[in-house]
Image (tube, rainbow, N blue to C red; front, side, top):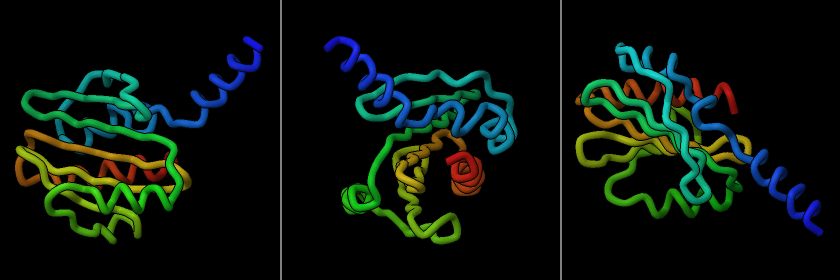
Length: 138
């Protein structure tokens, strides 16, 4: 019985993506045009999360396995203003938060949520570059 639970745990853990591998420190450094160190990886509920920092700038990458139908429900619940980002993908949405912007996207059974804060007007371009990197690895 214990072996069955252990095997189930391995399968559950392997069904998600590593957020720090999905968007790497090199990707973030390139997008911010500033050196960042290794990301801080953490599991937050269903999300695998990675946070990168450089000065006042913070990039947060969250990912989780999610069906396309469930992703549609997530999009409907984005608070505030959300705009379709069809130049990124048919499933991408940009949203606005205090001191930054976010982008939520879906590909191949995974949701990817990117948030950039502290970078001013460049956040949209940075999100596009980071989303491109993430989509290439999904």
